[in-house]
Image 1: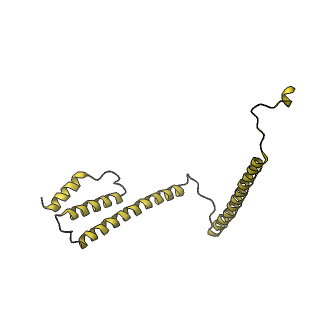
Image 2: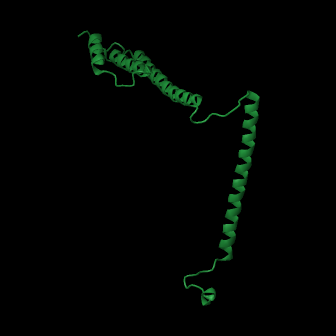
Image 3: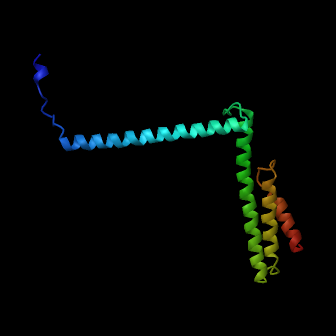
Length: 147
């Protein structure tokens, strides 16, 4: 039973300052946890009241068809908004070139417009996520150049 009264050589006692610093840190964390828990409870009550007001009987699950359809819609909406933004930027650029009277120089701008608009419309078609065929772009650009 001598091991009960033995102190290891590597033992260093904890100073009071570090003890109180740790205690202070623990109290701060506990207060933050309690505030977050109270906020969660408040928000849960607000959501429950809104569900009752709107007549929602049950919440969606990850495997519900409505949830899956809504997730697809949100992803597709972001994609379509990005395409519309791209189309808007292309049109702005063409207007800038038109203001500089570069719209009739060498047919480059018309080829650029055709290629960009063709790419945008192909991307908007939900069935055509494959690459834009290079032959159709080349043949249409040659036709526009009058070759």
